[in-house]
View 1 (cartoon, rainbow over the protein chains, first blue to last red):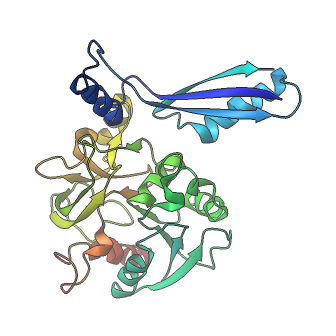
View 2 (cartoon, rainbow over the protein chains, first blue to last red; view 1 turned 180 degrees about the vertical axis):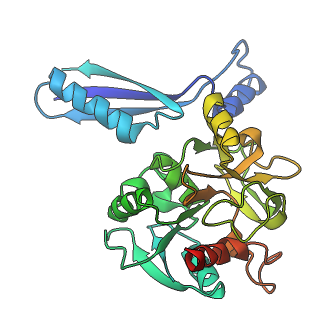
Length: 82
Length: 223
């Protein structure tokens, strides 16, 4: 089994109201020194068998088609364990 | 004229949309998300609600429903398609319209009667209005902030593709107060406010929304 992790983040130029809410809550709770927070999504895909370049390309395709909306989001794909 | 109204799992406003079609003088045809068959309709409304529970992103899963394969194909051939609220989100996720809808900048759900100005009457869904005309229709959304790149926004404005704009306080942080847009051809329109809730004096704040549905019939008669 291999785990492939897809991280999806809003593009830097897109407003992130949820991240802002978290950023405002932190100092209220005494966690100081955080300049900014951006909130994203993490997908963990458990693959059967080996991770090949071809399968990673498929996952990048899935990330581009479904897991992220390229209009507002960027994504990264990485293999976590094999 | 037969106007299809799609029900997705989690659609809320399909009945109101069908009712608005009927009040405008059209025949409303119920369409099912899991069925590619558009049942011979001349136009399609994607209604408001929370399709698939807004999982992943609003409209992201609905966009891949079997019915959308046919809707996207027919929209490309010029069939009129109106997306209201969640329907607008689905149209953006389908890339039938540019941009995307994100969480309201103030992070609260907004529900109010909203003043709009019609910026373009050159679409299949707004020909019954005059450009510059003001409307009041309900607005209710949590993720209604319209965003797009500066280039896209400039192109939309330059090509006259902003269909309706918010008047007064921006209710959800939409860039340039954009409430609704159209595609290049003017047959696909998406907007966050709900014209289908403003078609009868008894239940709506006004009947200003009816024009979206009568426009369609007017377009059909003139075509």
